[in-house]
Image (tube, rainbow, N blue to C red; front, side, top):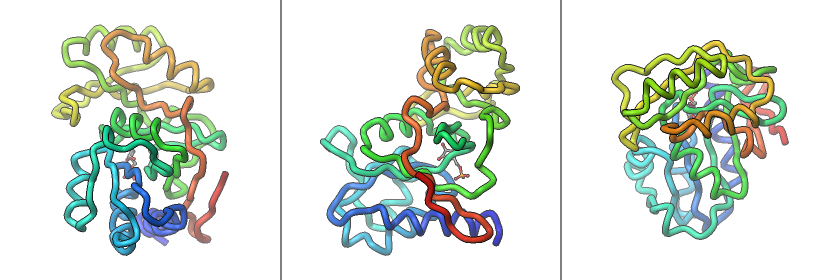
Length: 218
Ligand code: ABF
C-alpha cells in the first residue's frame, strides 16, 4: 500500500462515524480530500457540512454537498480532519496546509474529533514537523523573536496568506514534551492568532491507515 492508499483507506473508514441527517465538520488536506470524495457517496444521507477552508468548501460544493456557515450550526457531532503529527496521547501538530485557525474553531465546536491519517504521522514526541503559527502580519517579527525565546527557530512561510488574511511562521527545532503548556504559552504571545498544537483539544479517535489495514484507536 502506498502512503496515499493508506490515507484513502483511513478516510473511507471514517464514514462509519457519520450519523444520518447530521451536519459533518470537514477539515483540510490530502487525506480529507479523500474523505470528501467518500462523503459524496452518502451525500443524500447527510444534511451537509461545515468546512475549515476555502479549499475544502470548493471540493464539497463541487460534489453537491451543502456547506453551512458555522454560525448557523448549534451542534456538531463529528469533525473529521488530518494531522501532520499525532502522539499516543492524541495530541497533534496541524497547520501544514495553513488552515489551522479555522480547523481549531470547527474542532472546538465538535463533540468528537476524528483524526484520519496514514501511519507516517504517528510520533512519540511532537516537533519533528515544524509547528505552524498563524500571526497578524504586522506582528510577524515580534512574534518570531518571542518564539526564539521559547527555544524555537521560526521561519516565515513565504508567499502564503491564510484564508483569514494572516501569515504563517513555521517553528523548527522544538522538542515538545508538554504540548498543552506550549500551546498556552504560544497563544499568549500578542499577535498570535492560533498555533498548530491541538493538545488541549486533541483527537478523540484516530483512524490510522497502515500497510496491514486500518486501525481505529481511542
Ligand atoms: C490538515 O492537513 C492539517 O492541519 C494538516 O496540516 C494537514 C494534513 O495533511 P495531509 O492530510 O495532506 O497529510 O488537516
